[in-house]
Image 1 (cartoon, rainbow over the protein chains, first blue to last red):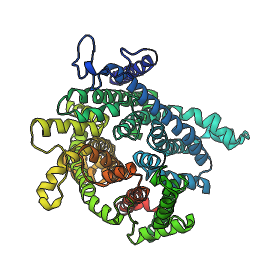
Image 2: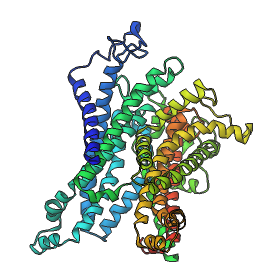
Image 3: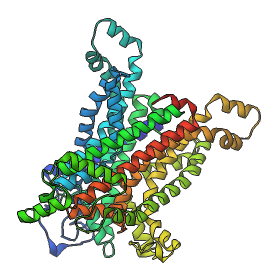
Length: 273
Length: 315
């Protein structure tokens, strides 16, 4: 019974943060654009459930909008990775051993040499910092991940009899990839997507912490931590809440990914430590 | 082996060439005119022209690229526009912080992950294993810069065992330098160690299910002896892969951690360069980092081929 518990726990934790992010679209306890200096650095009470920061902004409201920032950046970045990476991986697999396959794989290796932080540095140096940078940098790094995963899975499918049957029936490579390969790797992509989603949350937090991601006044968990660091001597409480939020969200997504993997296909367990 | 080595070296050279083209394109071609970009919109046309001449930006992109690359090959990274000193001097100075930090973190994470992964694998399914797996799950979820802040809070502010940041150079003594790098290295090592321990565990469990291990057990060897003498060596290949792959994350993580602890390393250098729009510094330091990642992966590939002859056929 251990596996469903993990899946359930991960899913509810992820759903909780998603709900928080969605709720922030229509309602937050307090507005965060307005500075309210008289009530700055308040400890948690019934008025401000998690207290206020150095500008008097409600931490809970900041946390909710921060969840929205993190989730949207990570989600779009996963989308970029899937939309660009999966077709590349499938195309490479259907032309196994060809120059095209080789090109895709070498290209993959090349992108892996640019950690998303380095991509973000390059983009920022030229275009200046923004949340869009974070999306682009994490998204570009996701492309080879999905290309590699879908290529690997597709390669083993191409050796199976039902694919041979489809080829004998006269279906082309593209059609086989879309109609037969893709449906059979969706589970794998779902699991990998969850993992990349959680890595994206961590990367976004890191980028906005060093100022290469979402810019003020947009609240983000990374920025909240950067602000908290300047006040760590006087008010260390500020450093705990956003950090715990990141840990809980990432932990939830990782458990969701592991749980999904075990639930959807126990054979996949070998593929990730 | 020689054929394999040659093909790997060719691919190493190609990767470096393409990487340098990408970096050159992003930094020097996309902004249109790097000189006016670096000086900002308030600069007079004369200063822009002067800077162009100073940096050699009045030449064609092809000539500039070739000049840059041939300079890199002989260790000439150009002159920093803001610091007015050779970038190679800046890099040599900063690398004395960044490289020891990365190596320190790598040693720490390996020293923690190996025994922990070994214990988890040998106690598979027992409470010890569950405890370790839960702990590593947490270690992966903690952002290293937040963990760094918590370390500062506990060990620098409350206990006062370490300073909260800064680095006074190796001149003050080796142990003094090591001490200022200890908290940053622990912060960097946590995630690494967690991932490595999990890889170590699953790789060992995989190896322990092999027939030759059963043979070793059947001939009466103790569990400990089987684990250490027979299983460990074969379980090392996936671990090596992860070690190599993670070098890039270590390097990237180092950039962030240097900012938490105000360490004067390559990460700080690159950030100051971004703020001051010193594109020449950004370009060369990014190239250096990408070079390091590509080189480490090349070395890992070669190491496998040495360890496992079956892998030489690929590539």
